[in-house]
Image 1 (cartoon, helix red, strand yellow):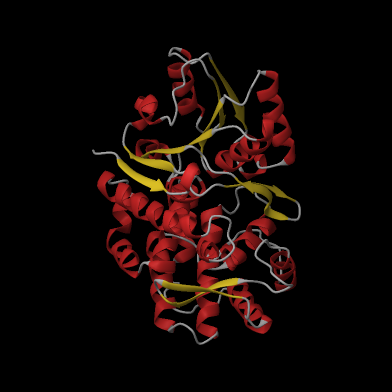
Image 2: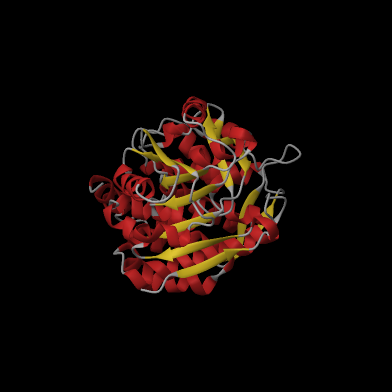
Length: 390
């Protein structure tokens, strides 16, 4: 299939996103600079080290001066200060310099961790994103956000630091369990919700093709998602305004992730699925959005097997006040007020810091209580089925 290219236009920091099949076998064609005589540093995790080893062999046998590889444990827990110290120390011990190239091979955790390390070691060295999950290919690898988690919340320490290229090989998705694909699909769906009603309609008809990894369908979904993100990032790189639209459902979702403990009980995309339902519920309660759009969204999430209620998270021990406290520490709080992305309709989102707390509380109560509001029949069985197939 033809390789698709989406450009992020940021003047001197512009870069291309390459989307296609078999790209890992042609990495040198997509590297933004000649690797001859340069030292390369590949960071990966235990889940995808096979892909990283393939690149390590290719670069080691090529004309690079040297190529080193470092493997961290898979999972959200690796986004930590301890791993930052470990990875930066490894780079320095292996003679990294400002001409070196860092390569992140993995999902969102690896992209965030490696990007942050690249932004601070030697005060910044070039890095390339090689995302291997659907979520990272459509979201976290694009746009230059890097970050690690702290006990106070998710991604509260980080930087805006753009990669020099993003190379998204859709063949790497073949080894993902359905649950991981679904987690990425939630972020794909987000782009339709915030600014492209036509894309949302396309996903309603073609979502299963995407999840079945039909090459044309999944490449189209990634391309549209990356173009949507490029449009937003180019207008507001450091999230002073419009880029906050990309956080639709994230204020709620990040609070659920923090309470779930980043231990795999709740994947990021699953939290965002629940968070988007909460955001749409809030929009209905604010009389911004028609309830039929809420029902339409939930029915689609249910149809593919994504969770829509916090009450579906096994073992979650929390309450409204605890979730509100976490949300109050979110990066999106401004002037002491929580900022939410709400919807006027599917495909038409906006940013608001004038959301009554009593409505937020009612949304949380509804989600934690698991009350049905249309389209929720059988969701727990479907989600658990996806969970067990990982």
